[in-house]
Image 1 (cartoon, rainbow, N blue to C red):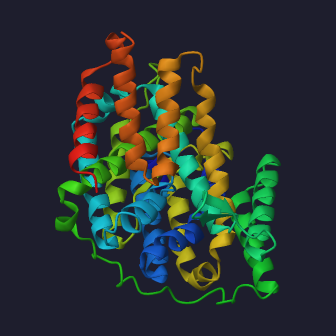
Image 2 (tube, rainbow, N blue to C red):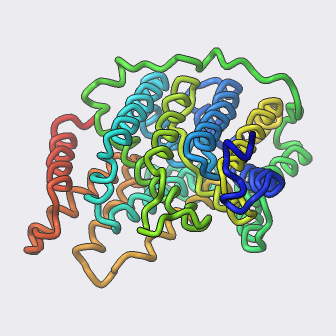
Amino acid sequence: MLERLFQLKAHNTNVRTEILAGVTTFLAMAYILFVNPSILGETGMDKGAVFVATCLAAAIGSTVMGLIANYPIALAPGMGLNAFFTYTVVLHMGHTWQVALGAVFISAVMFFILSIFRIREWIINSIPLPLRSAIAAGIGLFLALIALHNAGIVVSNPATIIGMGDLKQPAPVLATLGFFLIVALDHLKVRGAVLIGILAVTLVSIALGFTPFGGVVSMPPSLAPTFMQLDIMGALDVGLVSIIFAFLFVDIFDNSGTLIGVAKRAGLMGKDGHMPKMGRALIADSTAAMAGSLLGTSTTTSYIESAAGVSAGGRTGLTAVVVAVLFLLALFFAPLAGSVPAFATAPALLFVAVLMASGMAEIDWDDITVAAPVVITALAMPFTYSIANGIAFGFISWTAIKLLSGRWRELNSALVILSILFVIKLGWFNA
């Protein structure tokens, strides 16, 4: 049965290798079980329900990816978009988390439609690679600011906007040590480095009496507080258009980059350089995002940590299905997730920020018409506390600078149209 479903022999693998790869991938991405409830919980969402939604969304997404596309790629609620969901859409803009879930659902439906009609390729090919790298780096800087704030290292200051926190407090000390530990373990190729870092900081915090211990194992919490609570009609407000497009664009770029990167490492790319069954993979991803919003979590997306499982030998969808099973088993560890303080997940956020910012190394810094929009895009996200604003400023600045420098031939219709729409949005419908 497994051979028929996953074509193990054709991919030169076996059940044992696929199971090992699935466990490896799960350990690399299991940190989301602690980080996602911590972040989304700040909106007022029930953390227990978010934990269950996270497990179920990851299980559904990974299963669909494994069965439909037969790729060793696991899915879960994405980092960056969960922070955008909480800190920008809800806390900064003042929308309810129900409306934010509605925006996630709408963007997922749009992604599904784009995947079916293959419009995705047109969008991706229309956006310059430097601008895509800048968007990823900007999200990284956005996560870094949130991480430093959650750790108590950076605090608000009326005189200087932001300032240094009290570094003698337990939170910044433990968060800093946790970050150092994660980086060191990752360098040493230790599986589950991020998860180990989170648990280490949590255990030390509990042992020193800084954090109450809620237990380890129990029956899963109720999903009722978040299940089917999305407000789709509220999300259709014109002021949320850029928010929906931000969810959509980031999901498209993130997924495409992850799918291609993991496929290359697994040797699954076609001879023509294209990824076979890319359409199926994107349909699986958009389906998972829709399911996640119905369950009560931010955008579900493919995880680059799947590369860890590929390095362990994973070559088929069985790896993703194993990850799905492990996420279902994780449902019974909700008390442990509830014991993790925000400063314990801060090192994970900062580490992911470092990884996302690495794309800036690919920028041609000698071309000022490229470098300037890239820097504007990346800096606008943390400084305006909005991924959507960063994308808007990036598109507008890229188009304007290319036009004014006489290099208008480097533009395309998609860039120009989107830039005009972003100008209208920022000028007349900015919320």
